[in-house]
Structures are given as structure tokens and as C-alpha cells.
Amino acid sequence: MDLKIALLPGDGIGPEIIEQAVLVCDKIAKRFDHNIIWKKGLVGAAAIEDCGNPYPEKTHKICLESDAILFGAIGDPKYDNDPLAKVRPEQGLLKMRKDLGLFANIRPTFTFPSLINNSPLKKERIEGTDLVFLRELTGGIYFGEKGRKDGGETAYDICSYTKQEIKRLAKKGFEMAMKRSKKLCCVDKANVLETSRLWRETVQEMEKDFPQVEVSYEFVDAVAMRLVQWPNSYDVLI
Image 1 (cartoon, rainbow, N blue to C red):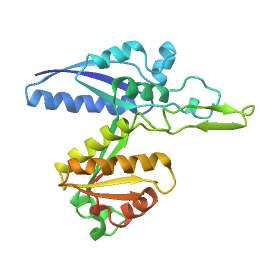
Image 2 (tube, rainbow, N blue to C red; image 1 turned 90 degrees about the vertical axis):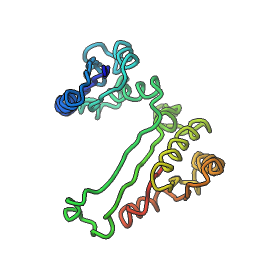
Image 3 (cartoon, helix red, strand yellow; image 1 turned 60 degrees about the horizontal axis):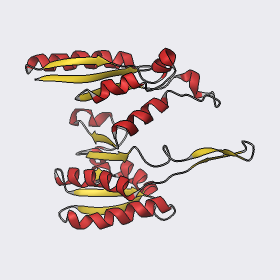
Image 4 (cartoon, helix red, strand yellow; image 1 turned 60 degrees about the vertical axis):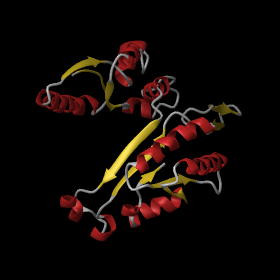
């Protein structure tokens, strides 16, 4: 099988870890008789230095023509403390997510039995932990209207979600729960935020389409505490 993979090392530690990832992928491909065609592109600070654009059209084209993207890291310390910078490395990652429709950040978390004794948490609290976080990536505060007013003395970032943005992420969560332990936790701040109330309302409406899934609703601060107390009590969290 021939596979085209866009290779975006990015910044900082990115090139170093991507170099090793390519070695691993090539070894696996050889073992199973696959052929990986790597197409390298610039993104982030590396792209800014080259052409002034953190996600150039050339890189976007490489991504569109590939079966997958192997991405390293993004960001450069020289931009971190410059509040006046109009172009930043991170803008490249956000634009890539938006332009390619990469709306779901999937983060699996599990414990290796051989490493449990190295954890600061008690064995009985983390043994068997196997959970997945799904985070929405193309809506919310990162992509909302932002700016300053009152002569620069007031700054604002507007957080908004559409029902469609919520539904497509929640659908992924439900589908993943169906393949696992059939438990889904919707994490929000519905006691305070209107956007969270829309999240909760939308997920409640979708429950009827997945009757086998046990759905719970928890505030984010309670989840933060329980993740330390009993992480093995969770399965899929959105």
C-alpha cells in the first residue's frame, strides 16, 4: 500500500521528535510491505521565517493531497512575550484546524501496569484507568471575535458555539463510547455559562439516538477533582 503523509516538523522540539517518528513509521511500513511517501511542509515560526505566513498555501496543498499528517510542535519563545506581534506561530495551527475541518482533539489516557508503582496516586485509584478525552477544536473562544477597546485598556475574546459544532463532536463521543464501556461524561460549566448550557441541552437531545450509552453531566471543576481521586471511573469525556 502506498501512503502519502504530510510531514510538518514545526518548531522547537518538533523536528527532533518527528525525525524519530519517521524512523519508526518507516520500520513499520517495511515490516508490513507498505510504502510511505513523505511530503515535507513548513508551519509555525519556521514558516514565518521563510515566507511570513505561519500556514502557507503550499503547506495547505501538501496536507490536502495527503492521506494523513504527522505534526511536530508549534511556537517560538521570541513571540511569547511580544504582545504587539501581528503574526504568531500558533495562528498556523488554528488555521490548519479550521481549513481542514480538524474539529476533534482525541486524547487517550491509560495506565501501564508496570508503571503504576511510579505514580504519586495510590494503586487502587489508578489501576485500570482507560479513558478518552474529546475536545472541540474549531469553535469556542479561540475562533471567536477578539480585540481591544477603550483605548486598549479593555480586551475581549468572545466564546461561541453553534449547535452543529457541538453535535458533530458529541456524535464522535457517543460513537467512541459504543465501542468501549458505553459511558459518556459531558464536562461543562452549565451553572454559569450559556455556551455550556447549549452543550448540555444538545447532548441531552442526542441521548435518545444512543440508548445503550450511560450519560453523565458534570461540572469541569468536579471532574478535575475526580480525575485525581478516581480516574478509572471515567470512560469517554467530551
